Structure formats: structure tokens, C-alpha cells
Image 1 (tube, helix red, strand yellow):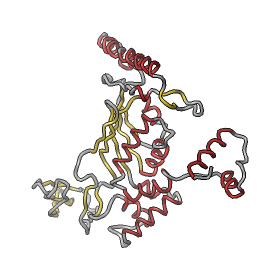
Image 2 (spheres, helix red, strand yellow):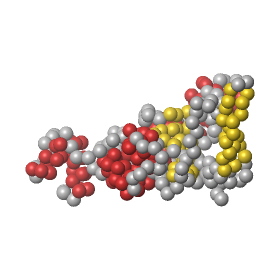
Image 3 (tube, helix red, strand yellow):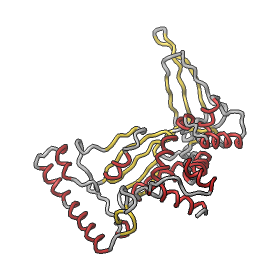
Image 4 (cartoon, one colour):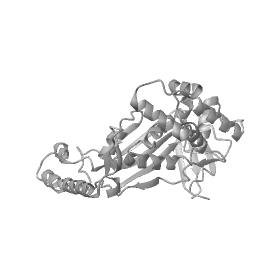
Length: 330
């Protein structure tokens, strides 16, 4: 039996001490380990499952994908972690939506239809019943973009209490990009090789600050102020826990082709880690959000009437032209 096998045997006993009773669960797992747990409260009803369950992570402690030279995204836990055999964590969404218990009475294809309905009509609360916890290492400048998504629970490595590790982000020459002329927030195509090499040399100079940072901390400079000398290319780490609804919102923004490539790499890895656990939800997410297109009322009128977009805003016109090209209407 695999290491993810659940309890094979459960013996239940009652013990009394000073007139109080408590329930004790004795569990025998697949490797022969015997554990006991006393609830200490006989008001608690312990209800055993009536179906076999499986671990959505197959008994593994973490699933990890390396990112860049020193980064990674690791899935370390999921809620639900245990699901009925033959089902996925999508079942928790269906259970919440139907406010039902146990394995349920609906067929899998009906569950799929319900989840697709929820995504299509943006009924989000049932999706919040599924959560994922990640351990992530990334450059500080990526973390500062990431933290703008304020719906997660985050605990980050502290440079006030600990010495920062000697790890820095260094892009390839091809990823040193020109400033976009149409997007003030982002880059465009690769910049000239000579300029890219000059930038990488600057990064090397900033990395040289690390030895001086260590030297100053050894001389007694407080870590909380010494960290101010470090660049945003240095790596940090955090644990990040979030519900599925807000994870999908994060992914819809950070997997978009307009997102900065560095954070897009992390978002793509995160998606790859969860899509096997909630495959029905992720399929609907791709169909109705990630690969879908939003049309404004002005754009709908332009299609309906066969007229130009009723606006003088250059950026809005450019966005409409891009949508027309994608739809084959240009």
C-alpha cells in the first residue's frame, strides 16, 4: 500500500478519569504505525467516512518547480487534502455550492456542469472553499509586485532577524528589454546587446555590495538597517496561502501576455502545480477567463453597427484594434 494510504483500522475506546470520560482513537496506518488521540470532550461526535479517501498530493510533502537560477514555486499543502476516491478537489466546490455532505448524489458530469456555470457567471464563494499553500523564492522586485494581491495570507523571510542569502536575479541578455512606448509599466523587445551587457555589469556591481553588507553586519551594524544597502534583485522567500477564487484572479492578471515575464514565470508554475488537483475548475478558468475576451459596450456597438469605435481615446482604440485582429474582424 502506498504511503498516502489512509487508516486501515480504527479502534475506539473510552477511558474515565476523575469522573470525566474521553474518547480515544487508535489508528493503524499502512506502515504499521499506531497512533492514539484523545478528544477530551465527549460532546464531539467523530464520524468516520463512508467512502475511501485519497491524498490529492499523493502523499508527497511538496511539489516544487524551479524558476530562474535561484527561485522556485513549491506547493506544500491543499485544502481539501483528502478527497473521495475517483474525485478531485473540485468536489469541495460542488459540495459548498450545493450545501451538501458526504460523497454527494450527483454524477461527475453534473458536477462539471455546475463548476462551469459558477465560473461562467462569476459565482465565487464556492471557489473560496478550496485553498492552496505555497513556499516561494523570488527576487524582491517580483515580491513587491506580488504583494499587491492583498487577499492572501503571507509570511516572508525577515532581513531584520536574519542575514539575507547570497542569491541574486540576473536575466539573460535576451530578457533585458526596451521600455515599451505604449505601456508605461512594461518592457518591449530586447534592447541592443551592448546596452544589455552594460545593464548586466551594473547588476554585477550591485551584487558586489553583498560582501560589504556581510562585513558591516559582522562589525555590528544592525541587520535591520544593513539590509537597506541590498538591491531589489536579491532573493526573498515566503509562505503564501490563498483561496482558489483569488488565486485564479491572480493568475488571470499575472499569466496575461502583458504581465512582466519574471512574475509570469512564477504564475505559470503555480498554475501547473494546481491544475491537476482542480482540473475541472482550471478547464473552466481557461475557457471563460484566461483565454476569453471581454468586450465593452462601445465595442459591442461597433460590431453590431459595423462602425468605428465611438471614442477618441488612442489607447482604447488600439486595444479595440488588437481585439479585432484576434477575432479576425480587422
